[in-house]
View 1: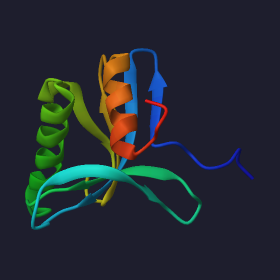
View 2: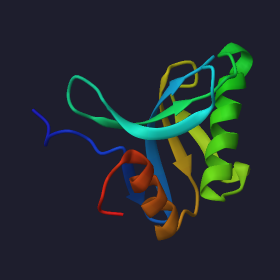
View 3: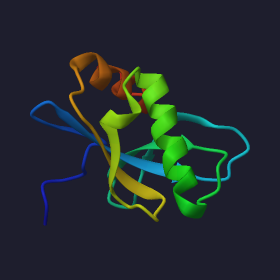
View 4: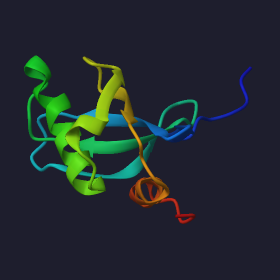
Length: 111
């Protein structure tokens, strides 16, 4: 058995890794809130109004996060889950302010 539930945000050196649950084709685009899977692993909820066709939803997720976190789009990439609703994103060279903002979006009061 593993050491317990996984957090939505992990850091390795200067990079942040973010677990997200994407809802493509939503009426409104937005992000925030924490989703827990059956093992209590956290993910940030993201809704985009783009369909999942040809990577359109992935591009919308990156654009939304880049705008919200004030990061360049080129700093954010999808590491795992290109065609899945459950993805792992990498945010290159993300500072503590970026991590704190993500914690706030997840609803964690520690930020």
